[in-house]
Structures are given as C-alpha cells and as structure tokens.
Amino acid sequence: MGFAKNPNVRYFGVFLATAGANANVPVCMSYQANNIRGQWKRAFCSATLVGFGSLGGIVGSTVFRKQDRPGYVPGISVAIGSQVLICFLVATLTVAFRKQNARADRGEVRLEEGSEDFRYTL
Image 1 (tube, rainbow, N blue to C red):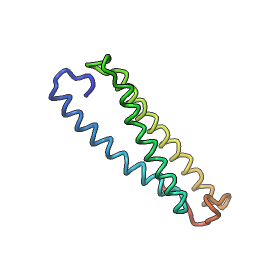
Image 2 (cartoon, one colour):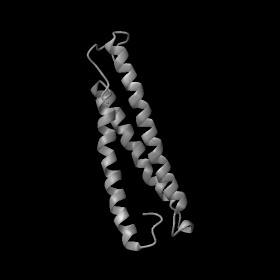
Image 3 (cartoon, rainbow, N blue to C red):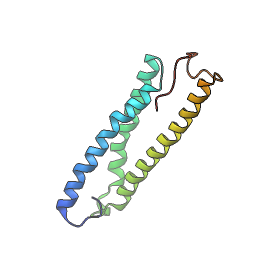
Image 4 (cartoon, one colour):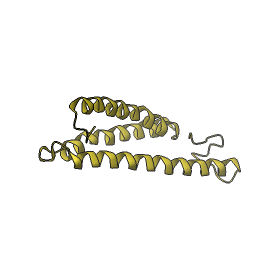
C-alpha cells in the first residue's frame, strides 16, 4: 500500500490494512481478558488496553506528516514497527504462559489468586 505507484492498488491496500487492524482489537481484548481473573482487574485492564490503543490515533497524526508525502516512509515504518513489536510481545507472553501452565500442572505454583484450576489461555 505504501510503496505502490498505482492509486487503485494503494486504495485496495487501505481496505486490507483496515481489515487487519480492526481484526486485531477483538483478538487483543480476548487474549488479555481470558488471562486475568476478577471482574474489576479485567475491567481495568480492558479499559487500559483500549486507552493505549486509542493513542495510536495521536501517534498516527504525528508520524504521517505532510512533508513526507507521497511515500510517508516514517509513518509506514512506525506502523510496521509497532506491529512487529506486538507480534514479539504476544509470542513472548505465549511462551511465558505455557511455561507457567506447565509449572502449575506439576503443582509447583498457583497461577493466579490462589486458584488451583486457573490456567492461562494460549
């Protein structure tokens, strides 16, 4: 989308990027909500996640500058970098959660709030 010369290709890329970005929200929300016990902690974490997600609009308005057109290389680089960071964090958390689940299965630890049946959702 960012580096294509044909405006029709770029326009189609906007639809693909929007579909991908909008699919991220329910996935992130369900991943964090399934791994937190207690309704107040879950509500606070969900609100925090939505709040930090909304900061993307502020960042987007500062990294997609008029003087960088038509390629918007800094803005596209920030967008790609943030997606890479999210993928890395999710992969890291998944590995950590898997290790904690294995320790809990062996009876070494109680994962959250003393509940013996709680396991992280992967």
